[in-house]
Length: 275
Image (cartoon, rainbow, N blue to C red; front, top):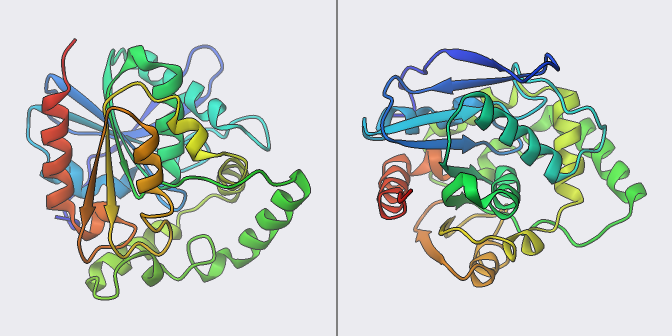
């Protein structure tokens, strides 16, 4: 499934600014639309297995976040999570998508949570996989030090991490190879902005603003965002939420357990698709 052919890249031009969002879209135009928001080391190709595995009744869209792939960077060098949410709203309105489901991974879960809190009228449901609780408040100086360190280490792997540490120890070689290929397409300007946003955003605060049904998916052996320190805490902050644990999986569930993730997501979407 993770070797399936990807839909071609498209571009949406946002208003008169000339800014663009690159994205991929399934061939099927079902009556439910889900937008996939990738992690800090990913891009629209991260949802390959979801394009291949979701049922035809679902219109699947995966964006390249601002500064990733062919998408225009956000203007501020240190954008806030609300800047990413505003760009996502522009994207949804440009494509006239109406109300959508959001399915986010890792860093992308911050955008998904913020968007659902700010613009609940645009969201049917929210699925947060490998969710991050964010960081405790740190100074601007410390953020810049960490950004510089992570950029310098980026040649060693995602966020300075070897790809293998993002997944379970027994993950197949194709999963590791796919992660490494995604890392090779990172844009330094987009990555540095994303890192600044990550280091200045408190996920627990965002979770308290969510008023839409939310599904938390977490790998039992996630070493990046251990569930008891991240997803489980976030789940307790969202009243209308469900927590599902994936045995023998790490941080990248869309690659490690794509069939189960697709089934869980599609079932949750079906339960929360009212107008």
